[in-house]
Length: 124
Image 1 (cartoon, rainbow, N blue to C red):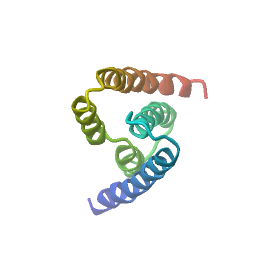
Image 2: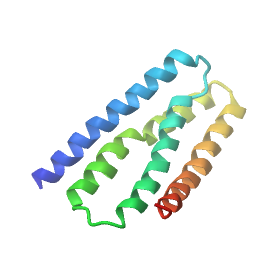
Image 3: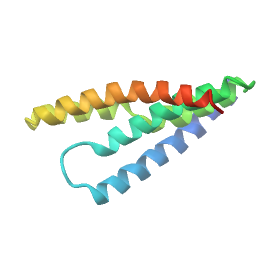
């Protein structure tokens, strides 16, 4: 049990740092109210979850490594709570167009990218 917790904790710290770095890059380059950084990490993470799941299903991988990758790294890299907070902020600021675009882009593109990643992994 302790090994699984360590796998999630170490993976989680890696994913959180990667997310922070992407947020920092976007913070320096984009100054409007649309939450581009959150959208980016969620879409990248969706693609990677699908792609890596497809690749790793071809091989035996110990459960601890799956926890490390999927729960740890990718679970902390993507962020539903920040998505929810961004939706709340966009609704308060009256940007209905941004609000609808953000919700649809995150959900439609996120799920589509997970499928795309999985099917692309079948090629390799």
